[in-house]
Amino acid sequence: MTSRTPLMAGNWKMNLDHLQATQLVQKLDWSLKDAEHDYAAVEVAVLPPFTALRTVQTLVDGDKLSIRYGAQDLSPEDEGAYTGDVSGAFLAKLGCTYVAVGHSERREGHGESDELLNRKVQAAYRHGITPILCCGEGIDVRKEGKQVEHVLAQIEADLVGIPVEQVTSIVIAYEPIWAIGTGEVATPDDAQEVCGAIRGKLAELYDQATADGIRILYGGSVKSSNVAEIMSQTDVDGALVGGASLKPEEFAKICGFQSA
Ligand SMILES: O=C[C@H](O)COP(=O)(O)O
Image 1: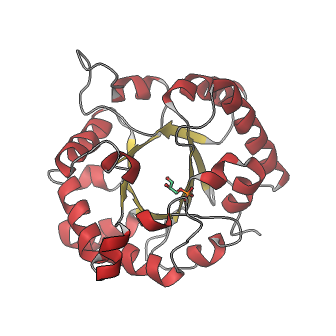
Image 2 (image 1 turned 90 degrees about the vertical axis):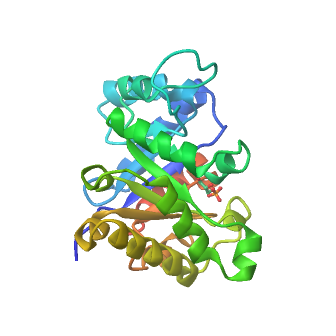
Image 3 (image 1 turned 180 degrees about the horizontal axis):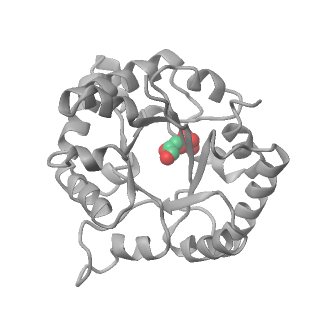
């Protein structure tokens, strides 16, 4: 089986101004150094608000940190009269490695459709930024037992027209909506069921070798106390962490699940 380097990504959501962002990244770096974190074994990234990206870039570049960073969203367009939007070109200039696309808080809170998310995935690739494509079901879908078909339909629609050469670098994040910020973490079996099905769908849409190389993250109330069992699942290659990524020592522990 292809080996996949785990990715631990902290999604700060709408938290931390640019000054607080600097402090958090410094503290995270110190905590990771204290833990002798091996970045080659587990990649670490943070997704600050747009307003903090420039300061995070300055700190990471200036201090030559190994922490990567990215944005939480991007425009499907590259430039022009799109008030309030932020172009992938601008994010690339700021050194963003990643951009989240289709977080449930955007799908639901901003009515983002699969058609729009597909255009955002394409926009990310146009600018050499790796999309972290988020998917997941709400509680009603879960109660009906239709989580797998729901998530696979999202993935298939969001990847329309994305060629194999591009999709090899994509990161998929499975986040059951009922587990986000609720303290209710999916069981390792729940996570594996959907992450495994996503890999199967990627093999069907592309090929098995491509699917085996793609990283699939789990997100939803991940903490240092539950990360090891989630990460023990065959098809879980990391975590997209919300609340716990705002606490540098805790996030560093999450990042070190393997060496703990
Ligand atoms: O993007 C992150 C997810 O929404 C998970 O958030 P959470 O760890 O606060 O549950």
